Image (tube, rainbow, N blue to C red; front, side, top):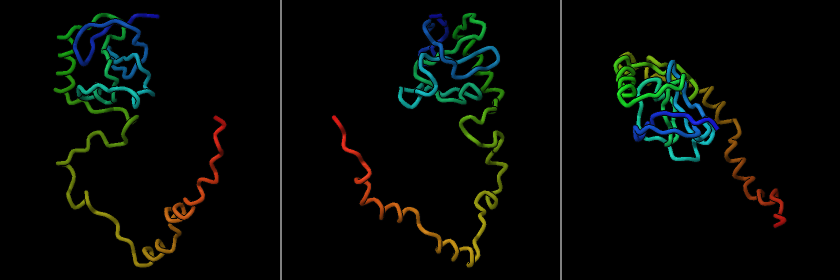
Length: 154
């Protein structure tokens, strides 16, 4: 086991441990945890909000920030890094979680365009009504779902 040293993002205390899972990798820094990415829905999450690319993912509560080259990071350096991301207003460059244009600004959106939708013709609307309603079909079949369950051998 390799001990990784870093700064706990929540408490800002220096820690070392088996933080083998990388949750975000930036130029000189990475955010790590003892928990794998696929367990994020099953564990407590970090409630501290980070700016820009630092905050593009949801992190476990034990997340640390450390340098890629394993040099120590101190509170001042982390504070300066956060300020830099706030000042430069770094945009999220990954679409791993969200498929949203990164530079969409409400001031640039015309209200008429924002809520404009295509209206259906009467013929298109009538065609829609003729299509079977899958939800109703499913509900009708709901009475027989118990027939598909096999008895437990326990």
